[in-house]
Image (tube, rainbow, N blue to C red; front, side, top):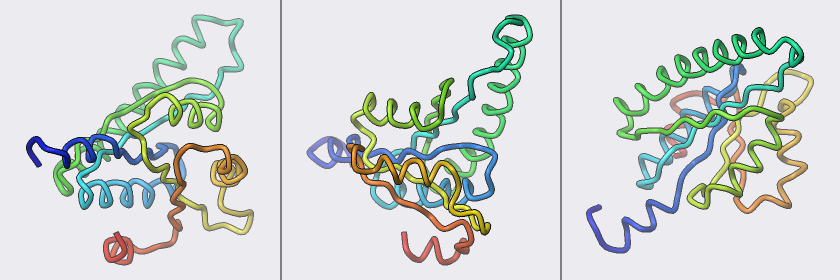
Amino acid sequence: MIGGQGENLAAMRKFLVVLDDSRECLNAMRFAALRAAKTGGGVTILSVIPPEEYQHWMGVADLMRAEARERIEAHFEVFAKWMRDRQGVNPELVIREGDPVAEILALVRDDTEIGVLVLGAGTDKSGPGPLVTAMSRNSGNLPVPITIVPGEMSKERLESIT
């Protein structure tokens, strides 16, 4: 949409998805991209680098941080290319350092355009995963709804429900 009220509404709606090493992150990415494409929204991809245990070795910590950022950016580019080529969505990457739950909460509060937090649920016996569990506990205090995408959901099923 060019101009008018629709553009303002689209700008107000971004899907926040967390990029990590989990398998279920894939379905969350897919869901966020499909919903953004269908609703004229955007996608923000957050990756959180956990605090380093090697703080007293600054050179090592800096090197590890730089390597983590490079790995995150390479991983992001794979998803971003798919989102741009297949869904027409150009995601933005946010990299933060700290506790993942605290950083998600801070970003949702900082970026008023984020309208939905999208998380992927793990499929093993131990539960949906630490992030889904922690964010569910905090959901009453979040200014946005959470969408939890089952890790085992097929690509076809995801496409049919978005």
